[in-house]
Length: 223
Image 1 (cartoon, rainbow, N blue to C red):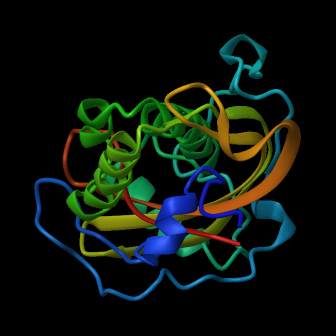
Image 2: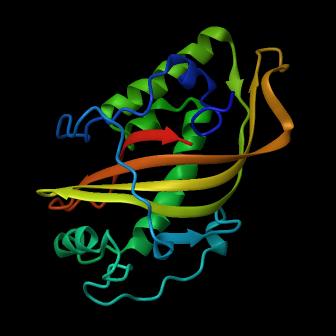
């Protein structure tokens, strides 16, 4: 079974992800349903090769005021423009850069069992699910030995804003090696020689009226 972000085998068994959690510091926001997915036009797709290396990333071109990074015909233009009205530095390109980094960073912290680091970037509900898996792994004497090989494509999947609370949903197409090892080093799940294609959908939330530019991961699902 290939579960959420490929290493989340136990999470799928728990059948507990895909719920929308709260925004850190503000309590719980939104419904308990999965984020609604829209068919995003090709303008909202960014192809990335070997993008985990910061030095390989292209230098971002300076953007003009209100240049949110999508055409006015995009179904997401109005929402992104409204976010930009609160945060003049916001563009789709800058957000995707941050989301790309967060994807690898959060996965690494999860696989390492680093709950302290995860707590700075996840909503309470999502953190609780991750911590549950980490604790289950410890009890079983198992560890992740996963490798995120590359992120092939990042796609804007949805965007909304309610008052000053903005949510952006991103679809990540990546390749990774998924392995769970026992305490003695033997392989419990997965194949260290097999690279899997993984599609993850993550929703990030932020109060754009606040000076804090960081976004919180509030929902996760996979295809």
